Length: 253
Image (cartoon, rainbow, N blue to C red; front, side, top):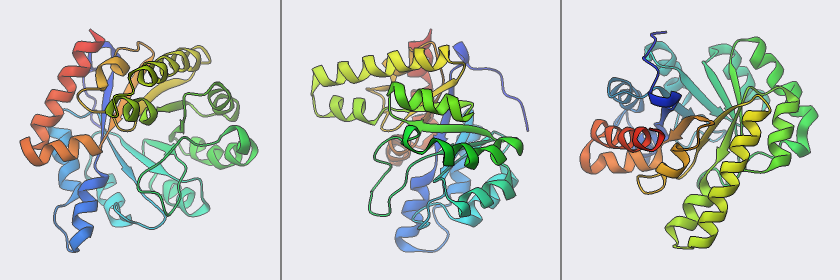
């Protein structure tokens, strides 16, 4: 895997290409190709690519994962539910990273964090073979102390903090709630870091919400997808990615 220079302050940008596949699947066929989007993001400076292989295959497909593994030089972060099928797929491909997320068929997007605290024993058994295979295992959780502690106890190397509540409150101009959610994220980033976990963040981040989260010194990676793919319709993916990177780097500097 090709090494990239470490970004300023150690803050990496992972680009989620799921919704390129959503557009492709709306009509069928092969266009637009999410693997082409992943390569374009890689060439434009993304530090990694994220793809969520869902049970119902509503966007990313099994063949997409195979082609991403074959062609990418940057790390692939495979988002998946904690099911036997997904574990088998991850163990077959051995991506650089695996992010365990909750999943419901009826949801439009991932609606909340994983309840690690309620399912510790099963999740500990689930992630052990992934770690043994060399995958960096991340748990996608709300900014909640009990969930972060549970992720640490089961042996995850990473927590990815769900930023959706903060972004939704900001978008709805619920300013006090947005500030409260941001402070909760800040506190849990510190707490997770103190436990020895690597800290990532993502979900719903856009140009107007990314700076405060990027400024958290404990956060080492932001995973952003829907906004960047949407913005690329108007300005192209390299330009959209460059602006996001600029905002992240300014906030971290």
